[in-house]
Length: 363
Image (cartoon, rainbow, N blue to C red; front, side):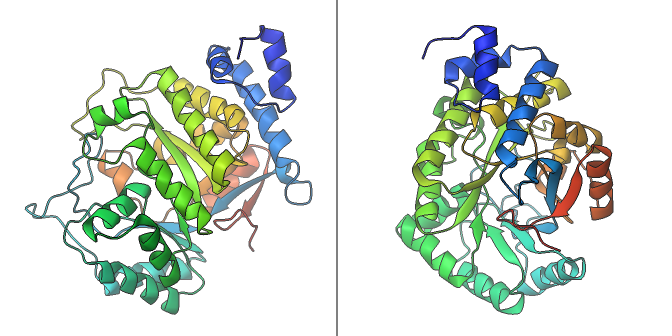
C-alpha cells in the first residue's frame, strides 16, 4: 500500500480506518504529542460503543494476583532474571497449600482472577497441572484462572507427547478460564533466535492462540520491546497480532512493555525511554484496529507514566497485581493498590471501574 501525505494519513486514522505497515512507519515518525493525540482519538472512537456508550469516559482495572508456580525453566532466555535450574538453591515449586494461601489473600481483597505462569519445568507431570486446576476451580469458583502462556503449552505438548489441542482442551475442562499472552516478546524469528534461542518460534506462539480461540478460550496479546529489535520488527509483530485477531478474534487486550535489563544476560546500551514507550503504545492502539482494549504498563513505567499513557491510547490500567515476581527480578518493583489506581484514573479525568478478564464491569 502506498504512503499517504501527512494530512491524508491523519484523516485516515481519525476516521478509524485500517493503516498499512508502511503507514505505521510514517506515523511512528510523527511528533510524539501529535501521535498521542491520534491514538487517544482512536481509543475514544473504539471505546465509545462500550458500556452503554460511556466507554470513552471509563478506565478499567482488575484485582488479581500473579502466581508463579515454579521458577524452574530450561529455556534460559537472555532477557529473564527470574528463571532457575534445579541445581540452584533457590529453585521452587509451590505446593497446593501455598497456592491456597495466596488465593485466600486474593479473595479477602475482592480479587477475581489469578495470572498463573511458571518456567518450563522438565519434570512436573501432566496430572500435577490438571489436579491443580481442578483444585482451584472447586475451592475458588469465583476466581478466573488466567494461566499458562503459549510457550508453556508448547512445552507441555512436547513433554507429555500430546497434541497441542488435547492439552489445551484438557486444561480448559479442568478449570482454565483464559490464556495470557506471555512469551510473545517480538514475533520475528530473527529476533527470537537472538534473545531466546531455545524458546518457541513465532508461528508456534500464534498456533497456541489459534487453537485456544477455536476452543472458546480468550487471551491477551503482548509485546516486549526495547532490546535488539528495530522499529520495523515492532510493526511486523503488530501486523502478526492483527492478522491473528482477524482469523480467530479471541484477543481481549493488548499490553506492551519495555525490556528491563537489570540482572539479565541480555545487555543493551541505552534503556528504552519513556517517550519511546509512549510512542510505541500509541502506534499499537492505532494499528491494532481489531483489539478494543490497550493496557497501560505502569508495572514497568511507574504510576505517573502509567497515568500519562491513558492519553496515549490506553483505556485500561491493568492489575492491582498483589504479587509480581518476573519483572521485579530484573529490578523493577512498582506497586499500587486499588485505591491508588482509582485515584490515578480520576486525576487523569476518567471514571475508574473494576472489570473481569472479559472486560465486563464488576462491583
